[in-house]
Length: 64
Image 1: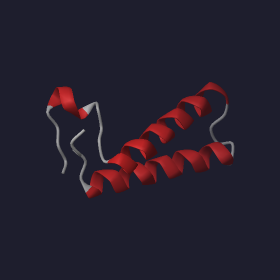
Image 2: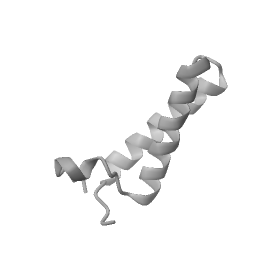
Image 3: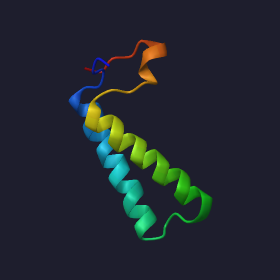
Image 4: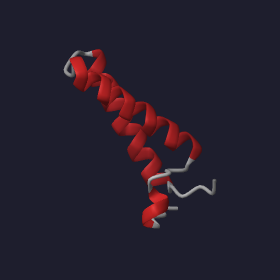
């Protein structure tokens, strides 16, 4: 897995994940929407940590 995410992309994903987490904790998002947002937040944090987004491969996107 060659890293394909740049720093701005990684920082943006962390910020979005934190916002989603905050919205879940404060119960702005509830029910099924909260579960979906939580999964998206976890995926964003994981891809930011490793610097690789598998969805970028088929489209040839590299922000690094």
